[in-house]
Length: 416
Ligand SMILES: *[C@@H]1O[C@H](CO)[C@@H](O)[C@H](O)[C@H]1NC(C)=O
Ligand SMILES: *[C@@H]1O[C@H](CO)[C@@H](O)[C@H](O)[C@H]1NC(C)=O
Ligand SMILES: *[C@@H]1O[C@H](CO)[C@@H](O)[C@H](O)[C@H]1NC(C)=O
Ligand SMILES: *[C@@H]1O[C@H](CO)[C@@H](O)[C@H](O)[C@H]1NC(C)=O
Ligand SMILES: *[C@@H]1O[C@H](CO)[C@@H](O)[C@H](O)[C@H]1NC(C)=O
Ligand SMILES: *[C@@H]1O[C@H](CO)[C@@H](O)[C@H](O)[C@H]1NC(C)=O
Ligand SMILES: *[C@@H]1O[C@H](CO)[C@@H](O)[C@H](O)[C@H]1NC(C)=O
Image (spheres, helix red, strand yellow):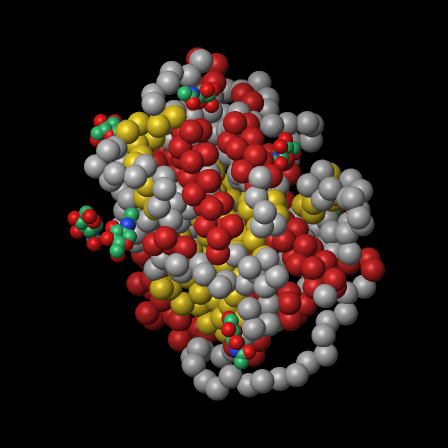
């Protein structure tokens, strides 16, 4: 199954060794959060038990200007400076944020990465309204499934809504591989489920798993999917864990028959396994399914300037010209398009790759964590080796992904 790549393509697979340790941090975090949770959960967010009150409320009103014009492609547009409307929350106003993403607190000198608004060419995104979103989520579960990038979308969504919920009426629980945020008065939950390959793998343990060593079970998904059953809104994502080497160890059928697969081949087979579960288990009338395209990385600054071997470190402005980095693999994109295109169940694509490509300024860089700890002074002074150009600061780019998801949910809500 192994095939050599033409040399000019190899780059896109050869994410630096740093990638492995970054992914590791991402997963270790859950372990750390989990320990912390024992102390903080109740202290900060009040008991999550208590009687559930049935409250009849008038349905929310969705005005015409909150609806996206028919035919407007919200993924085409530009970033505009708007320090009045953005950020939608702050590091201080969201105590739930983990240290890995609070770049200001971690010493980042510039903050303008928080002030950009995504402006589609043909229409406006509705202004995010937490109360409306909670109403849409009433008696429902919204679940984000994927890796640590997807977890930041979950973290962002929680921050976007949590400030309108009074103390004692919200809770954050860690039940590996899930994190669950509950809004009690709405009987609503926003959840994250750790499944970096979507299908089963040896990296599925949320708190203790191998990173350098990968083994994916391309035809097995049921250990995960049984926990996805009946969820009202599912948002899937899987990319960066695949992109470590041009080939990946995997099994298909017999678990003893481990082979190296071309990553694109393996990804396609895994997507088909996933699609098959969706087709046989999702009820389109009661459930919604979304798929996020790949979150771009900014590992090599020669891609957007006359580079000096650097990366996203010290970038403070979005890219202002047409741009697509080699980290966002077009073969993988093609597979996503192809697999979703052939499905009967309506899976909606949230194609955030292009808009996020412009945001070389949005990554945690040296203002995040490595192995569960903030970088030391020495590590910070060595961005070539220590900058994280995969994960994003919050508030930041993942908030925009949620603004788009919100726009779609709002639109759906009005239709019914
Ligand atoms: C917002 O941005 C404008 C233009 O850059 C600047 O003049 C102004 O001081 C900023 N306002 C705040 C509150 O940062
Ligand atoms: C609360 O929400 C769950 C789904 O998360 C739903 O199954 C249940 O029926 C809801 N409870 C009430 C009283 O509506
Ligand atoms: C799936 O679950 C079964 C039963 O709990 C377990 O034996 C198996 O190892 C799991 N598969 C993976 C890939 O974790
Ligand atoms: C993590 O997993 C490894 C191998 O499965 C095991 O040897 C080790 O004890 C585990 N560590 C923890 C903290 O559970
Ligand atoms: C696949 O597994 C074999 C045996 O453990 C190992 O030698 C090889 O490096 C692995 N391949 C990849 C791409 O990780
Ligand atoms: C392996 O992947 C490369 C790059 O995506 C692709 O061009 C090639 O056709 C694949 N080879 C096989 C055998 O699938
Ligand atoms: C996502 O958008 C990009 C352009 O922005 C396009 O090239 C790509 O094909 C789209 N992906 C899918 C799966 O449709």
